[in-house]
Amino acid sequence: MFQVAAHEEVIPVPELYKICEIAREILRGPNEVGRVIARPFVGVPGKFTRTPNRHDYAVPPPRGMLLDQLYDRGVDVHSIGKISDVFLGRGIRESDKTKNNADGMAKTLDALQQTRDGLIFVNLVDFDQQYGHRNDIEGYGAALEQFDAWVPRLERMLGSEDLAIFTADHGCDPTTPSTDHSREYVPLLALGPKVRAGVNLGLRKTLSDIGQTVAANFGSQIAKGASFLPEIA
Image (cartoon, rainbow, N blue to C red; front, side, top):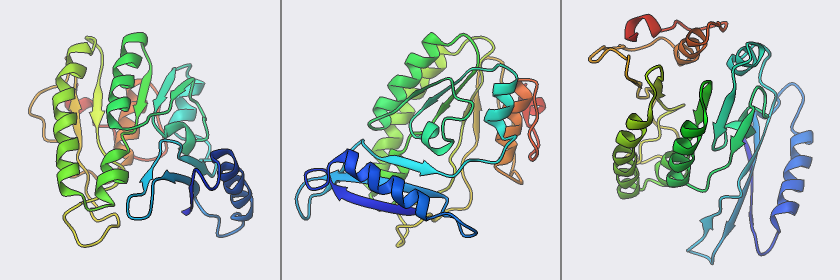
């Protein structure tokens, strides 16, 4: 990962994006960098804050990934947060950028209200970006409370055939001395009107199990992972 941070009043956002586009082309080859990230911020020394204008320049995911499979089957995908950037828009019909967790959760409910079927793929970045990497324990706790208070609203809006899966792509514990990714294990929760309650999904072998479960839900399959759909259906 290669990140370029710049103050918006010193280097305008379009110019920062151009810098990152040039860096993206340079950082290729046999040791290709996975993502180049534009990190605009504002404020004064000691009180800098990141803005919502972050932009990720990723490498193309391998063909045959979940979003490709869903696209081939005509499944509509609505992404919320940085998902579209990370996957270069592949297989995504509609996408919404977000300013923060609250904005992401609100846009998730809006998307759920407007979507009859398909996949809503959401990333709430504040846990990682704002609190985990900054060792902000109180901020992290408040964000969890905000999310917990929102889940019942989501649950009330789920249709009879809907399935919601909550997880993370990595752990970022704000209580550890390091500001790096500090946890190998991540949560895995499934929710929905037809989800069997009290099922222990155990310690999974790979995060790909979630992708395989989503694929199976839409009658498809990806290369790796074991679906837990039979366990919860």
